[in-house]
Length: 348
Image 1 (cartoon, rainbow, N blue to C red):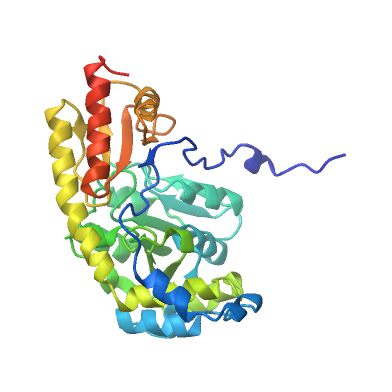
Image 2 (image 1 turned 90 degrees about the horizontal axis):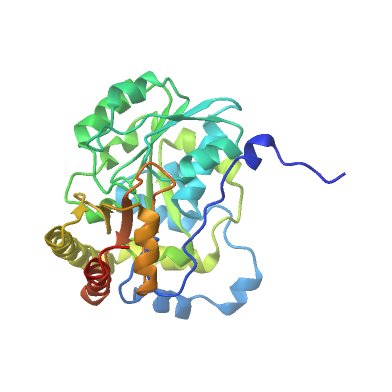
C-alpha cells in the first residue's frame, strides 16, 4: 500500500508560478538591471569554498545586519527568504493545532505553512478599504500573527499606529513582514524590534534584485532568536548568497535608485490605467493591483496572448483583479500597450 499524505496536505493547492512566455510581471521580482554587488561577490568567493559547507549560522552576515539596524547580532536569524522565515517561526512558536492569525488577502504562503505545520490558519479579513482590523486581529486570540506591511497583493501600508496598537494588545508573537518596505515613504515598524513579542522580517528579493539568492532575515529579541536557530539548523544559507547579501546591505545604492524609479513609475502607470477606465488601487510597493469589469482569469489570458504575464487573483478573494509588477519605463509601457490593445478589441 502506498503511503498517504496527511488529509490537510491533500486539500492544499500548491503555489503555481505563472509558466508562459512573455514579459513576466507576475511575481514582483526586480525588473531592473543587475545589482552590481552580484559580480563583485562572485569575484570575491573562492570557488573551492563551494565544495565545503557554508557557515553554520551566518555569523559574519548577522554582524553586518546588526550594524545596519543597530540590533544585537544574537537577535538576527537568516534564512531563505521571508517565506522560509514564516515557516520557521510557526514551527518554533506554535504547537500543533495552535492558531496563526493573518489578514487575507495577503501573502498566500502564510496559511500554507500554517497548515503544513499542523496548525490552524485564523483568517482576519481586511476591511472593505483594505485596512487592518486591529480589534478583530487581537480578538482572534492566536499563538502567532503575521502582519504584512506594505501588504501583498493589495499594495497598501497599514498606518503604523494601527500596527503599534496590535503589537500592544496581541498576546502571541507578532510577526511584521516588511518585504516591500523600501518602496514606501511611510515609517517602517523597525522600532518594534526591541519588544519581547515582535519579530520583523526583511527580504532582499524585491528592492535589491536578489530573488534568485533566496535570502531574508528576521530581527527579534536574542532569547527568541536562539530558539528559532534550533529549528533553522546549520548551513541554511549558501556561502555565495551570504557574500552577495552582505555587500547589498553595505551598499544600498542600487536599492535607493530602484525604489525612486518605482515610485515615479507606479504613479504614471496608475494614472494611465485610470485614463483607460480601469481601477488601480493605491500602492506603496513595486506592483499595482488593478480592478477590471471582467474576471481576472480572462484578463490574465488576454494579456498573456499579448506577451505580458500578470498575476490572476480570481481564485482567491479578488475576483476581478490582476496584479502587475512595476519595472523600468519600457517594461511598464509594454503593460500599458497590452492593456490598451485588449480594450481596443472590446475586452478579454
